[in-house]
Length: 123
Image (tube, rainbow, N blue to C red; front, side, top):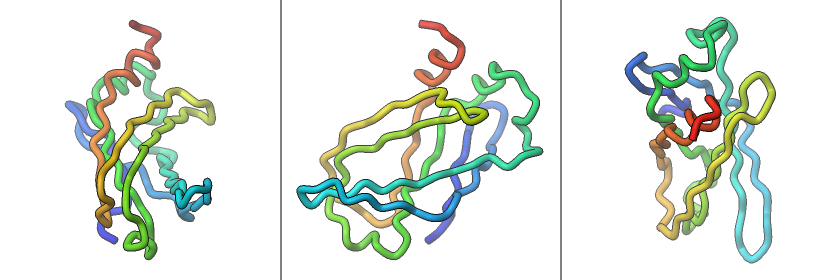
């Protein structure tokens, strides 16, 4: 499976966000399935107790797409959705449309500029 963890990357370094099992699969009809991966930051990490503004020091979210043993069953990726929660509250949501062949173990690099704007209430 490789590295199943997600990472924040930027001038402050690289911070791991742990993959949280299980992977959820939802049949949404028309031969389409939603795959839900969850990642969680452990307590006591570098971000704990820091102000939200510290998150500006991370430009990208490196996000693996975990399908466990079922990855070879999928043909295409049509949509990637990312929700970031902070302290149990939704801080940001975004989505990207795709029409690409599915390859087992894709990793996405999500730019966080829009997240920074939303988090800091800036345009």
